[in-house]
Length: 120
Image 1 (cartoon, helix red, strand yellow):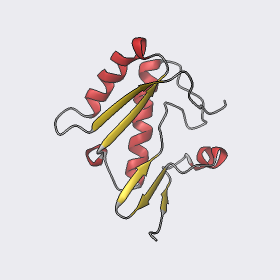
Image 2 (tube, rainbow, N blue to C red):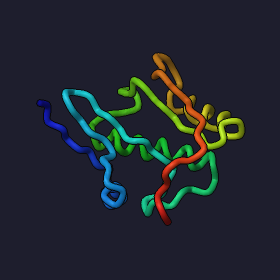
Image 3 (tube, helix red, strand yellow):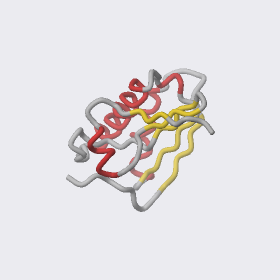
Image 4 (cartoon, one colour):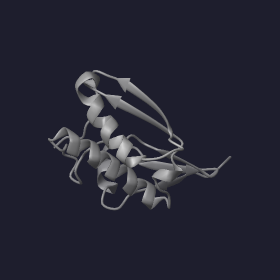
C-alpha cells in the first residue's frame, strides 16, 4: 500500500480542517489536488467574478507550490460552472493566461446548479 502525504498551502490549513478534506494528496509520485475556489484566506468568496477566477488560480498555485509543483505539472483540469453561459468566456480568458502555450492540460468544463462554498 502506498503512503499518502497531505499537502497544505500556507495560511489555509484551518479552512481545510473546518471542511474536513485535504487540499492535495501526494501518492506514488502523483499529486491529487482538491477543487480550488476563489475564496479569500478567511473562506469568504471574492465578489467580482473575474477576480474570483483569478483567486481560484492563485489558490491552486499556492497548493501546487506547497507540493513543489507548478502549473506546468498539471495534466488534467476539471472546472465546474454555476452559470456557464455567462461565466465561460471569463473563465476561458483567465485559463488561457494561466496556460498560455502548448502542451495544454486536458480540460473538462461542467455546468452545475450548486457548489459547496465556505461560510463567511
